[in-house]
Image 1 (cartoon, one colour):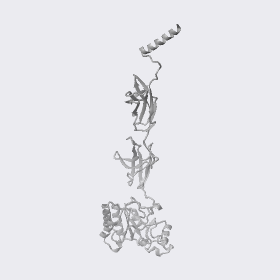
Image 2 (cartoon, one colour):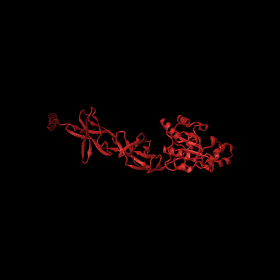
Image 3 (cartoon, rainbow, N blue to C red):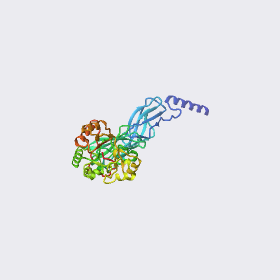
Image 4 (cartoon, rainbow, N blue to C red):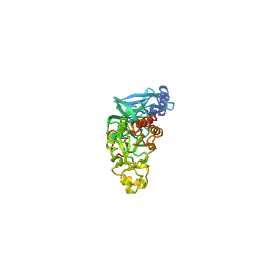
Length: 428
């Protein structure tokens, strides 16, 4: 009797399951799993979150949600694939640095199933000034050391200057492997004044950043020192691509000398003058006047002998007063040897000869001297002429200036103020 009762209960249970759809065993609820997502990205980037619904079902609504304030808010939407996998962009907060919490959601059978929450950190890529000068001399080359956060090499950083109330871009530099760049601060380099600048950079995703404004005060005059490794016998004190007009020996008179220097100054031309000591003693050359009007004065011996024919002590004598005692000197006739070189070094002078010899001393006319110089001189050249021949006058000097300018070549500029007695190089 008991066996029949148990059998009846089993049949009833089977019928109930068949008739009313009751599960014979419980099924696990669907799950949403995060398969991949970048934990850190640059500001501006759009990372992708990849998720999977298990068990797989195609075409179900899927979405990303982001935690805003105190609740989850829907961001991007899509659908699951045949394998239950789906990919959606994480766009919220794309342009703002910070850490954001997301989760994935899939709607199945009228219910919504979620992945675990995960974070995306958007890293800054702003440009930062690490160091920069607050002041510099006129003509001095200076740079701002900058860093572009989290981007490494190959990013462009540009200096911008406040000009007439608007920011204007100037020189740029590219970051190195450490993410640093040395940006030239070139605007207004040759004019005294106070300048306002900043740096700007744009990351690979189009997000632009600028630094705060900085101030650079330009004052005085900067004359660079030429390292021994960069010193050139022919270029002498010239560190630029401008042409130096250099004049040896002695002018015909102090009056013509002063008139020529004033004309050169008015044309913003700085001359290199190399008088003999005998010329100075004769009163036809005024070194103080030349320097006061923006011209450089260098040594050319006392009495113009061929220095290679003299003893070491004889050369030393020729390089002293009443000749010009300074930092550069030109041996007469361009003649030098090891003895002469040693004597110049002992006097603290470097030998300077020339690139272009006009041979004006052969009696060439002013027009011939001008034509030869304009056609032959190249960027950075030193041109040799003489103060008592036809290249040393206002018309010849300004003619050379305009002729070279037509070729895109500039002359050394007039020194803004009194030129130093012993400059490390010329201010060109």
